[in-house]
Each structure stands twice: as structure tokens, then as C-alpha cells.
Length: 137
Image 1: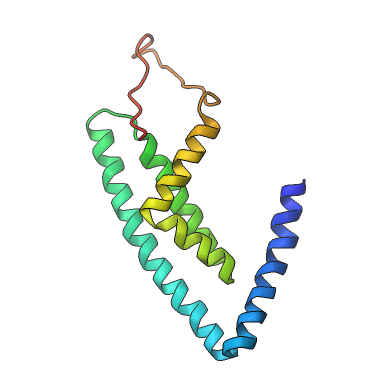
Image 2 (image 1 turned 90 degrees about the vertical axis):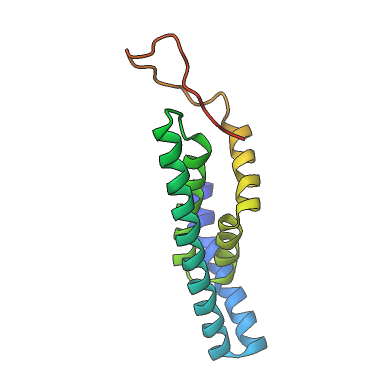
């Protein structure tokens, strides 16, 4: 419940505050222009990174490996895309950080440490004794 309050109340207030502060410093039209430039840059970067992850995901699947890191990257790129849709500088900066490969790798490692051992792997009848090959750096 506290997370939802944070997401729906605090985050928009922070975003509005930052937009107003930036607008007072550089002007309203420049602020809108900067938000548009960041959005276009973010959309281009999301498409580029998403295409690369899609290619690596297909390569892992075609070699018979479970694409663990690629799936996490795809989720993080999707999250970055959603953050880019939210108007504001804070969410856009967070989205850009998720789209840059080195920072995304850092977030992936943190997520992996947090959730390792909490995910159950379903083993079908085809391979009851052999666990899947998961390629996570």
C-alpha cells in the first residue's frame, strides 16, 4: 500500500516540482523543448537497445539456452519505455540510466542477487533431472 501511495502521489508531486524549478531557470518553452528532446533521445535509445536484446534473446533460444540476462534486460528496457511515457525529468533520467548498458547491467546484478533462490523453475517431462542452462553474468 505504501508503494502505491509513493507511486501515485509522491512521484507526480516531485516531477511537477522539478519541472517548475527547471521552468523558472530556463523558461517554459525551453523546458518543454528539453522534455521533448529527452523523450526523442530516449525513444531512439529504447528502440536500439530493445533490438539488440531481442537479437541476443533469439540467439540464446536458438542455441537451446535459457535467456536469463536477456529477459531481465528486456524487462528493464520495457520499464524504461514506460518511464519515458511519464512526463518529467526524474522519470526520464531514470529511464535513460536503465537504457545505458553498463547501468542496466548493474541493475540486473542487483535484481539477480535480490531474487536468486526465490524463483522456482518448472521442469517439464522432457528434462526431469537436468536443470536449464541459465546464462546470467
